[in-house]
Image 1 (cartoon, helix red, strand yellow):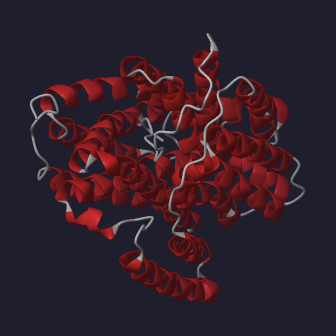
Image 2 (cartoon, rainbow, N blue to C red):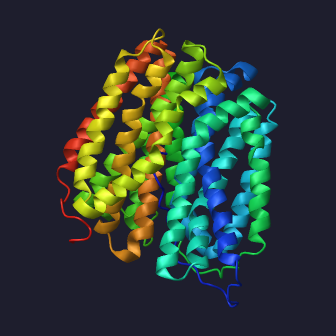
Image 3 (cartoon, rainbow, N blue to C red):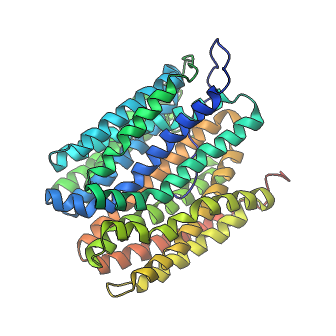
Length: 460
């Protein structure tokens, strides 16, 4: 993900006992490690895909499921896991999510076949959806003073950005040294370290929070069926498309009647909210799908090693965290519209520049051509997030952030499904069609961004 995430994590209680010296730092370390782990697993697997395909004799559709099983489970359940964190208590929910994530990672590494691996990836995604909001809630709990909390949240977010930047390189190094199973086994010591740190974290008191289980179930069915239809195609895909349409209709019907819906449809009546979600979704389609496609391109078309492919992403991902900071400062000074109107065209230019790439293009040149896409995406997402947060009342900020992050993750997963289907029919032709489609999508959302307010947050 090319940006810091903001999750739906309400303010938890501090518990009865005061925090002892040193505990806030340990809690922050535990929360940062967990958030970084969930971000890492969204990108580290991409470089290992050719090795997984070779091990199991998997085609393109199988490799798409390895990525999307995690991404879509993560995205769909993140709509409700903020409320679950409240009901269970942030510390308990975080420990449960971390333990499940660690066990699921072990199951991935030990998977005897592709279906077992995909099932374990679903479990990883479920666990990640619990970990993300609970981790931010723990940071808020450990730092009740606003100034210290702001610095702690910034460190937490920077950990996610660093994990994204290191993901392809780590995936390449682990695959080269230990095989594809290494990208999952590396999670085990990190998960164990988090659980040890949590022993000294303050306990959170459970709080009542409404859950929209029918809406959540309908969302899961709709996303799973739609993804199946895109990846598998044929008669089975057609049947899945029908199921997806019915599930979407059911979801909309449920959300209109629920007193506490997971996705309040009224949010989208606000022009800023609708634009922010549209832009965030387009950016995720472009970024995640390009990383997926070029992970395969470097290895399958240009015959680079897994480590070589990972290193070729470093110029692209290494600039994300720094650009996020610059985008935040531009947003504070000039408002969200300016950086969004700069970032999206830069990303479009990067996508169009990649259209000239083929099997004979020097890998170093391809790596440089990927940089504008990363810069454009990293410039765009912080201001669109700020715009959405400014557009909703404070008491709905967590819910709105959950909707935005879910939309972005879902769009990234569906983008991988669509672009994977395109390259399966002929890699270079499908790759160019994918790049052109992403550029067209970002061009449309650039036009939508003109409607945003030009005021800075400071002046507002």
